[in-house]
Length: 365
Image 1: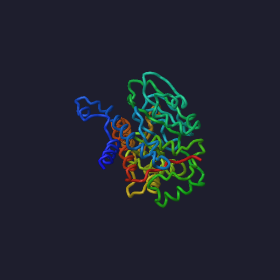
Image 2: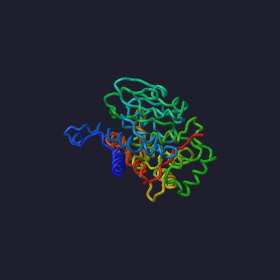
Image 3: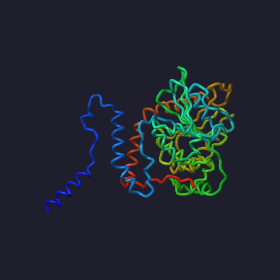
Image 4: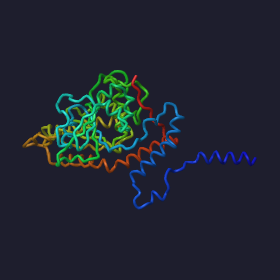
């Protein structure tokens, strides 16, 4: 009996979670907060989340784990010709991305400030051992890596883009034919059926050659801020935009900013009210709550080489202030980086501990 008790006590002792650090290290006057946090997060992932993930069918948490070091990041998404690249160029202070009314960019571009100029294609970025966080993107295949690149830009002194911050430009979302699961999405959104991502069905966005919805989900979960841009010509949520809202951005409301851009193209307050109301109505059909998210209204006139219009009937100075609010949130992404890491880790631990059902990632068949 004593031998059995001793064997059981030794087995339980082996299952105890032992910290890879001591409390004295954390309470030191110069603890190295960043290194300590990364050490703790890595320990919790390896000791708790990974063993649970291995026992669950489909490994739902396999791609939710954080890899360090990871630079703070802002993700910019929206319909084509919604002013994404123009806004990014203004942040950088240089013409880094092509702009135009027609779709001009068909891939994901990571831009960051650097002391030297360089452009790396997708296979180079994903294959480099130093880019450990990006290596997970290899699972999306060659079709994605061929439409992915990273640009490091030398910026002038007046540029407001700081060091240590990445901004991701994305291909403009397009309207797809209402077939298959897209029609089901529209019916589900209209009836308020989508409150969490439902990734069981075949994704119609595979027409790009890779699963666009899943790729956006990967970026959005790791971004510290997500800007979703609309323009007055296309303020609705149909096709690809609907799928991204209901699937890719589900559960990420705390870091999502909805922006109605290019309001200077509206002629009067009546047109503005119609565009704003249309966007609010469209969002109310997707987001299951009484209050729609705050919509930031701004315009691109005056950015880069675009002169502002004169004698406008709308209060452009008020919209310029809202643009300053959006820029302030972008610059604050570095401050909220580790808060988002802790929030994501807490949510994963809650789901793994039985507090919620882990979402299944979409599959491209």
